[in-house]
Length: 154
Length: 154
Image (cartoon, rainbow over all chains, first blue to last red; front, top):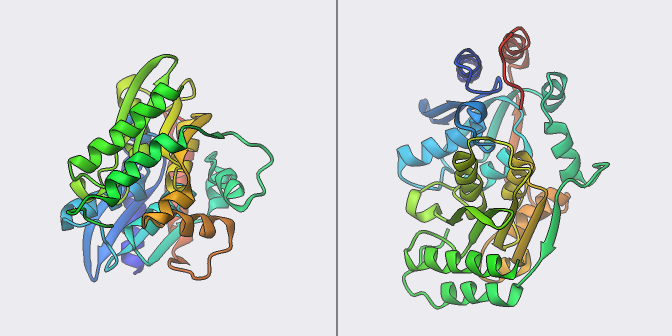
């Protein structure tokens, strides 16, 4: 297990060296096999969702040809932010090994802890306004889904 | 505003028709201009993170060439799941218009409400185990970041 974590850390260092983004690396592992590895690429790709864990999950699902990664585990060099934690839920990965903590991340200027405060309902400010609009019209799309005979549930 | 929501719904229907995934569509809008649109592609791409909102944010940041979308708003045909909500935070989008609700989504078999229970601390089960491991080694990657002179903060 520790070897995989060291590789996740090495991936993090590689991302920094290549100017791809923050110092975060992740591996998706199936048994003894590394299925996918990734480092943060927010700066390199201009994609705010290009966190190491999201990219590792995306690459692993492409590698395995399925969106269900329940037979895999995730190694990440830092505790996942809430976005990545919920990506783990959707991937059905059941175990996450993480190195640095959210507090460590805050110490070098990353805002993960604020997002955890949002998650826990203790955030001091509300940065995103959610407005419900046009529900009746949008329910039409759900009806199309319900009436579709050949849909693939997930 | 309502026209954009109708287009998000049309995008959702298109995704179902094309067998790409669930009935969810989203648009990133800057002023009067649609910067990016997307529908759920979980089934099409085998990527569990390929929700409409994530794809719309990813495409919008590529289109605009920056990870900061604070001058944009998001229209989504259904209330964002927690993963997508936190992707919105990272994108710095400040306003989200949504059509169907998380309860509507549960009604057609999507598990968003369970994820909201995880977020709110009221979930009846713990599907993901988080294990801290190798923190000291991983802190090395943070030191590399701190000592890097030409880093791009985000």
